[in-house]
Length: 122
Image (tube, rainbow, N blue to C red):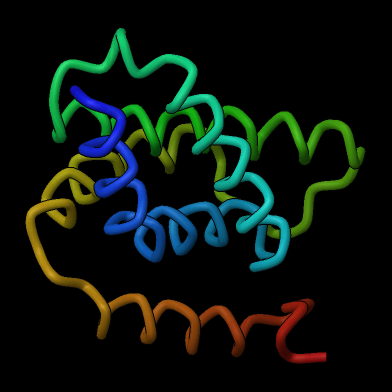
């Protein structure tokens, strides 16, 4: 995968991955920060990424690990999804990779805004 192809996919997947990270972190600004870290790592490791589908899965998996590490560093866990729940949802994320989900992303943000202790509801 060339650097140009990788950057193109990173830009296309930005909204989707940030929505996924926001579902873990519950704070869009933190999700954006984690996504930026993931992008830097993707550029460094592009030689190990075989194709677009591999990159999409890699982005989610790496993002999830970085987000969970961030939560541990912060020593607080707001209402986040357990690892088991995230594992159960993984097949749905793969299906989502194949679809245009701008409406679903907006719906997710709206639902998260309605949750108690939501940063957006304050």
